[in-house]
Image 1 (cartoon, rainbow, N blue to C red):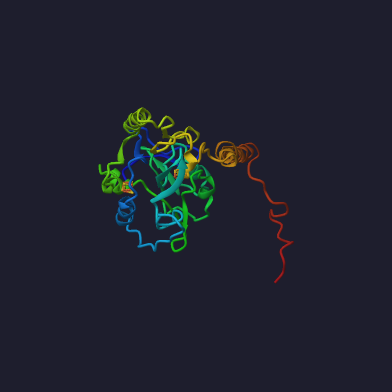
Image 2 (image 1 turned 120 degrees about the vertical axis):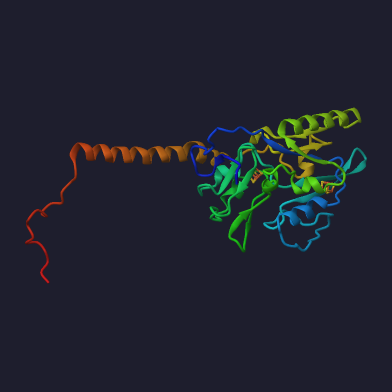
Length: 291
Ligand code: SF4
Ligand code: SF4
C-alpha cells in the first residue's frame, strides 16, 4: 500500500512522514435522484469478491435489514407521509469514513484500523483481533464481525482502486449519476449546488449531511428533508462516544506517560545505586540445599 497513514489505532502519534500531502477524498450521494436499482450493491460485492448473499425481506424493498460482514453497501428504504403525499426515501448505507473515526479511537489493537492520508478509514485484517470495540465506537453502526475470519469488516471506499486513480466501484456502476467521487472540497461544492437547486424547487429544508460531530465525513449526502436525517436512518448529531474519547485522549496517553516514567525512574535508580546484590549469595554457599 503506497498511501501514507495519517492515524493508526492504539498509537498516540500518527505514523505519517508529512513528506506528501493529499487532499481528503469523498463520495457524494444525492438521495433525491437514487432510484433504488441497487447496481451499487452488486458492484460492491463484485469488486470486493464478497459472496452471494441471500436476500431477507422484512416488509421493505431493502435487500437486507442491515449491513453484514459480507455486505458493505446497502440501499435503505423508508416510506413516509410527507405533506399529505408519500415520499420514498432511499439512502446508501456504508462506512462514512469519518474525519474523526470513533472505530479507530476505540480499537485497542495497534494498526488494526488506519486512516490514510486521503482520509479513507480501513481495517487491517492482519492486525485486527476481532474484539469488536470498533463497533461500539462507531456512531453509524457500521463495522461487522466476520464469523469465518474472526475479523471486523466494512467498506474500504475501494482504497485499492482509489490509490491507482480509479473511482470506487459503486460510483462507477450508478446509472443515474446520483453518485460522484472526488476531493472533499469538490464534493461539498457539488452538494451545496444541489441543495440550492432543491430549495429553489420547494424543498426548503434540503441540506447536505456532513456532520461536524465527527469532524465531517468522507461521504456527503444530499437530503431533501435535511431537518429529519432520522427519516433516512441517519443520526441527527453523531459523536464519538464520550468514554471512547476519554480513553483515546486522556487515559491512553496517561498510561503511556506512566510506563515511560516508570522506565526512566528505574534507569535513574540503577545509575545512582547500581545493581542490587541478593543477600547471602557472596561466597557463602552453606545455605545451598544438599542433594
Ligand atoms: S462510519 Fe463508523 S466505521 Fe466508518 S469511519 Fe466512521 S466510525 Fe469508523
Ligand atoms: S446505483 Fe445509484 S441509483 Fe442505483 S441504487 Fe445505487 S445509488 Fe441508487
